[in-house]
Length: 99
Image 1 (cartoon, one colour):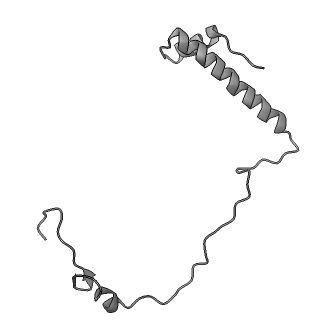
Image 2 (image 1 turned 90 degrees about the vertical axis):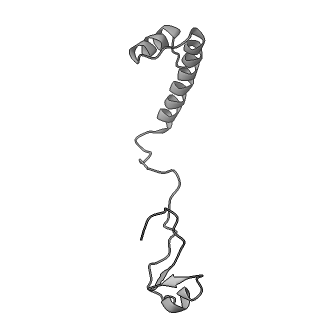
Image 3 (image 1 turned 120 degrees about the horizontal axis):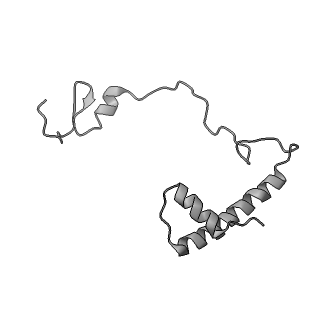
């Protein structure tokens, strides 16, 4: 089990120019020990026989093939809009700008 003394944590905080209270130093010493133990456990498993991977679960592409399909008729589509002009949707002006 790894351990970090409160002096080490205080020194690291000082080097990083982080002001820590005595309680925070003691708490971080315990938390750093837990992190160091977790890293040590991973290092035990990560042997040269284990291939490097970017993700533990194999990923597959879930997207469909890009295919050209028939599109909607523009005039028929615009006919369903409340208003249209020059082949585009006509919407209320919201920014107060002059057209």
